[in-house]
Length: 102
Image 1 (tube, rainbow, N blue to C red):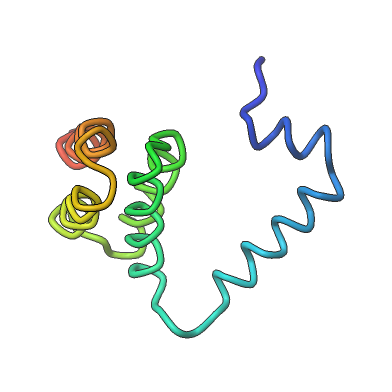
Image 2: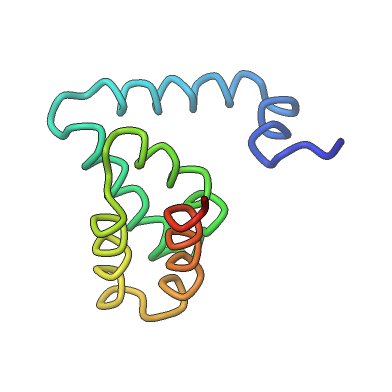
């Protein structure tokens, strides 16, 4: 079975991966924004970067903390003015697929 990029990072650089995980946990624990808003911002940032793999991983997390289809679509569409259409075209189908799946 092939490792995911994150699993490979953890295997090859366990100390760096642990430090990175600590950073992520600190960001999750911060109180300035609720978890839904954090997920929507993260999805928008990763869409702008064209990182649909990260977006695919975070869409269910956003849904689990209450993000609606409309909120996710809006977050993705906001990236149009920053990075153009390519990220939107990669990510929008992922959102539609997740919400339309029976």
